Image 1: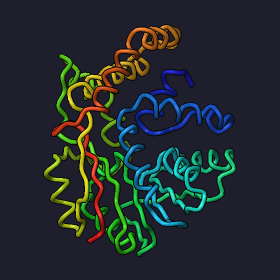
Image 2: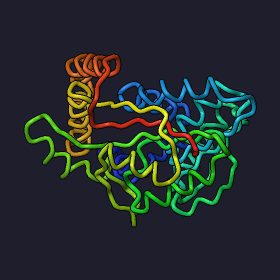
Image 3: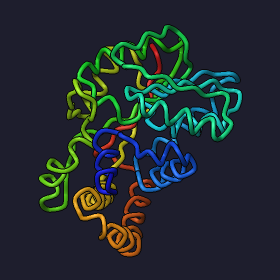
Image 4: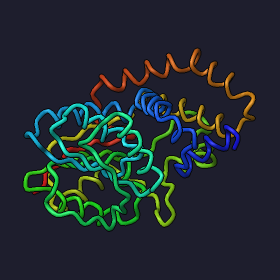
Length: 285
């Protein structure tokens, strides 16, 4: 498999390169890079850290749509007293997350393959994280209902959902739709993509017996520009010949990542009343 095919497979279907399973430290490095270049994860880390600091000893957390298990393992390290369950629709994600957890000697986190639409957990968790997953599931209302049932009385849901989808760079929307629709808009068969608004998310949470405690927006103008810059890199990696990939990555790192990082920082430290990302903390009513 060529590098470009491996990248395309990872972005569009989460078919992880086999080298990840042979060299878990490389996969952990990719996790680190993903955290560093994805503004959404900055916001989720900040809010999740605040929630984790407040929950009681021995709390239980569900990472719903855990992917490679980044946040599951992050919380497991911060709170060794906790019990964390990460679930994901993709068996390969679960297999890799389990491998990475064992590689780090984490015994308080486990992973299962699970369809969130058919999640059957009752009053088990103090905290549920659902990070950029809800928009890819057709039966999103059923998922919220399942979350409500899975939480203990007074339990909290930390939900991040893309909203509004305002784009700024000329022609970017067309390129995004052509090359990255599978990556950002749902890769599992049978799922459909929702273009939520923040008002719709509030309404859905309320209708499923959640009380919104806190909300904030990410990806304002500067954050959206940083997202579009990084997305252009992904398009290049998916489409250009493999021999030119190292040069593209080097040029991006030297010339574009510094201004992208600055744009992300501005977005992260500046309060806003609108944006393309919506972060909500809600409590089970």
